[in-house]
Every structure is written in structure tokens, then in C-alpha cells.
Length: 456
Ligand SMILES: Nc1ncnc2c1ncn2[C@@H]1O[C@H](COP(=O)(O)OP(=O)(O)OP(=O)(O)O)[C@@H](O)[C@H]1O
Ligand SMILES: [Mg+2]
Image 1: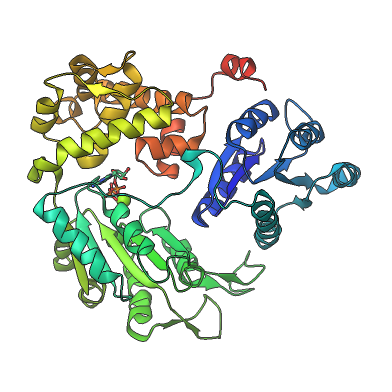
Image 2 (image 1 turned 120 degrees about the vertical axis):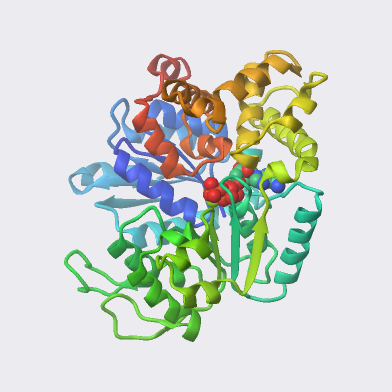
């Protein structure tokens, strides 16, 4: 577990490295320009920097030198196209820890990083990155309602075994959070937790992602690649939106659950599956079974233990504690003084329908905290956010308002995190790919004047 900064102007590289590294459990910050890279560097003091040599605004070497000149420098791994050979040599001479040539080979990236991280951690002689937001501390689930207490008990029981779990509940109720807590409390918590969103990718790729492939399995399979089942080791494989798994893949996956064995696509060897499988859905999985969209036998295999997370409106007694918690968190993340709610706000929060559940509550409080200037979050700050909340049923009919509210929330989160997309996504409680899609949809881009002003 380390804090890593990736600086590259190629969007695709940034995005894929960010996803790859976050999946490995690292905290990743990205920057597309040299100026922004330095700004992020001095803000977060990452353990390792992956730095492209050719950046639009500055030479990577210059940045390397700036980093190395400051106290306790990170390990810097340069990335360069082949024709930058000369520069690479110079980079190594200047004190770069390693270099990788493009096109990047993901195994090579992993090896180089692993060494650099070990060294950086040993040198700093502390296992924790310096900035609070970057510590992927253990997750906390708030709630005292009988339903939540029951869930805590189930989680406690799951600590002792590797039983398969199915988590059901509306969007934003905390299914993924529960999956992470189960993992963190399991005997194999030091092993990875790997997530696969079954709705996010096409059928053939999904199979590939799950099982991996062997060299030559198809055009483009130039190397052996482990799938997520293997990558999870003895840890946890989290299958999100499991009802979206195509029937063909369901059949193959059933084999994994029945025999605890699988083969890579195009491979001949049998691999053992050792991980715990947690799946989640916000859809009616029983309905999918009845409609023939989800295999009944697979459904039974997945629901050895089931956790049903009730919607927030059915456990309103959890709202005050959740609201206070998100307020503290918002203040800490935004680096502002601790705040309080104005009298009457809590009552209002307790009445709201919260169709987007805890995620919506979190968004509203984050956004209201951003909006409020003083130390008190006023009723009107909350009211404004409830008006524009993306889940508010009253605004769903009006797409314009819906979009402008959401766009504004996203823009705020991005500007407050200095366009750090992973942090913004966390702040908004949405996934990184979803955030990227929304950034593209709303045509958002960093405010350049702001970046210039922030040059380190
Ligand atoms: N009880 C809780 N205590 C603290 N935070 C919570 C709680 N429940 C949910 N959250 C937070 O709310 C957000 C949404 O939760 P999560 O992503 O787990 O929802 P989900 O059920 O997986 O939603 P979806 O079906 O849309 O994927 C996250 O930021 C999560 O940390
Ligand atoms: Mg989820």
C-alpha cells in the first residue's frame, strides 16, 4: 500500500495506470501537466512518482530535479518512448530510480513499482503516507438501527471463514462498503480485494478479466495474463452488479464456485481459486432468475450468506449519526474548520426521502459544506443541495436542472481536489469510471488559469 503520483499527458495511460494501481490498493493521484504534477507532488508527498519525460509544458527531467532537490524525495520512475533513450540515460544519471519504456508493459510496471515502494517505505521508516486522505484507512460503517446491527453481526461471523456472500440493497445503501469491511476483517485482509463491475464491460472482455488468458488465446493476447480470480489470491473477489453478468459467463463462473477451479481463456492448466467471492446487486436478482436472465444454480451458489441492506428511509434513526459523520469528514477533506448544522437542519434531513440513500446524504452534506462559508451549515445550504440533488424525485422530471445540479457538484468536487479524479470520485461517492464518463458528458476541464496560479 503506497501513495503514487502519475504524471503523463496521455489520457489513456493516466487512466489505465490509475485504475490498475488503485485496484492494487494504492492511493493514486494523477496530473496531466508538469506544473500540476509538481503541485500534486508537494501537496501529497507520494512514495513513488511515475513521470513521463515528455510533457506539454515542461521537461520531465526538470521535474525530476525539483523533486530530488526537496527533502525526503519520492522514488521517481521515468516513463519514456524508445526514441528518448538519451534522455533516459540522463535521467538515470540525475537520480531517477528506474525507467520504463513505452508502450508500457504492465508486468514491468508492477515489478519496478514494487521495488520502488518497498524501498520508499523502508526509507521513510513509516508505513503511512503523510497526508490523511491518502491513507486507505480501514472503512467505517455508521449506524445503530437494528438492521445495521444485524449486519455487523453477520460481518463478525464472516471473519472466521471464507463463505460466499451476496449483498442486496438499493443504490447507495453501502453494499460496496460492507464488502470492503468484510475483507478488512477477514484472516486474509493483507491479500488483495479485487473488484469487477460486471456491468462495465463487454461479454468477451469480462470472461478475460475474470479468468485471464494465455498467450495466443486470441489476436492481441501476446502474453499470459492472470485474471481477477487469480489476482485476488486468497483475498476477496468483489463482483459488483452481478446480475449484469452475461449468461455465457455465468455458466463458466458457476464452475469456479462448484469446483474451486478454472482455466485461463485459451489455457490448458487448471488453476485453483482460493479467494472469497462477494457479489452485490441493486436489482431484484430473484426477478432476474424468474425471467431466465440469471441462472438459478448460480444464484444459490452466490447466496450462501445473504446481507440485505435496507434503504435509508427504512432506518431513519441512522440519519443523525451519518449526517454528523459526513459533516466531519467533509470538513476534514476540504481542509476547513469543523462545522455544525444550524438548528432545524437535522429534522429536515431526517424527513427527506433519500431515494439515493446514504450516497445521496453524503453528497448533499459534502456539497452544503462546500457552499457554507462560516462554521455553521445553514438550512438554506442544505435546501439548495436537496433541490439539485441528482436523486431528488422532484427534479428527475426536469433534465436540465438535474444535469446542472450534478454538473455543479462534480465541478465543485474536482476544483476542491485540484482535479484529482480519484479523490473527487471518492468525495462524490461514485466510481472513477463513472466520474470520467460524467466529466466527458458535461464537457468539464480543469481551469487553466487556476493551474498556472498554483505552480509550485
Ligand atoms: N452506513 C454507512 N456509514 C458510512 N458511510 C456509508 C454508509 N453507507 C454508505 N456509505 C457511503 O455511501 C457511499 C455509497 O456507498 P456504496 O458505494 O457502498 O453503495 P452501493 O450500495 O455499493 O451503491 P450502488 O448500488 O450504487 O453501487 C459510499 O461513499 C459509502 O462509503
Ligand atoms: Mg456499489
